[in-house]
Length: 128
Image (cartoon, rainbow, N blue to C red; front, side, top):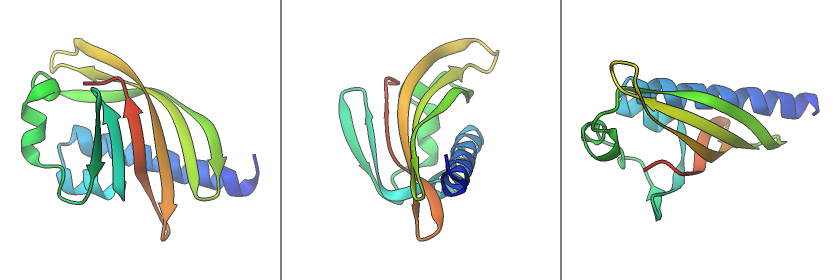
């Protein structure tokens, strides 16, 4: 990699750190700050086009997150990197409050730099 791509990977990795920290804190405003919009999510046989305001506090209390307490990255490997876009092969695990594992999910994230801001632009996972 070049110094330019090293810098891109560092910025994109920080974005993923911020994404997970905000998600675990259930901080919708900070969570949305970790995106570049529109963002695309492919999961559970559906494609969601995510725009600002898509996420809401109630999303943490139902569906696949009803028993969820926090998540953690298990793997974040760079597949491709350029100065304004990084593709990651990832795996994250969801946990219950008692530390029990709900499940681990392989996924791909595309993190882009738009107007100087690193944000999640697309993700595809096997998570519900």
